Image (tube, rainbow, N blue to C red; front, side):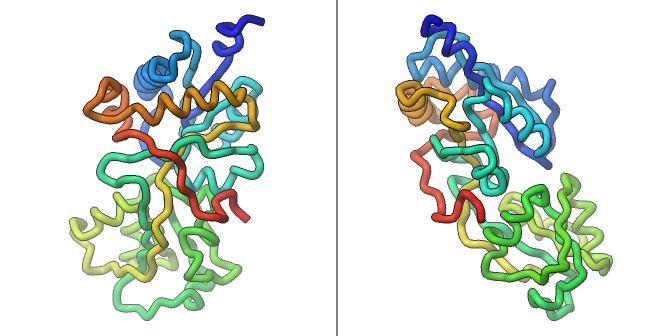
Length: 257
């Protein structure tokens, strides 16, 4: 098998559970990104394919395929599935309007005295709810939850916050963008912040099960590190709300429990 043929089988899987966007809408943007990445890496044109899946289960299934050599995922996904999928961080994403790291915020109904213990029997609603280990052991590491707290995924965070403000037995865990928008809500006075996470990575590109040869991984990493807004790769980054990439700097327990 020639080098060009081998590289052509490489696929990058984008998976962003809970965030808006369908595979059809995303595909042209992913193709543009893949083209810019291989150009910067010095790979042959067309040697990197890209696919998108908006669900955790779909992303896990795609990453199980033999041609899936790379994963572009939010940190909660990485934390939850790194061990299962044998993920190894390649670069860390610098996300527009957020940066390299973000704080997650736990929000409850105002006027109540809320501690971890008082959440017994409650449900946590979050875009990261598909990653319960991340919620318990990373985002709320310093806010130990009762064993009977349920964790549910939702992409409808506004509806979740309305349920919180109405006094239902639910709380919401928000990413940094969602938390920043909190004061603009007409019912913001009915909500209170009860916990913050430490600064955690936002997203990263990872190698999958060592399917990409080390030399190719190194050249791709170098190519991705050269990509930045304002440079020649600006056109491929901005639509994906990216500013560029840096070498990964993840917390020690990033592979999950």
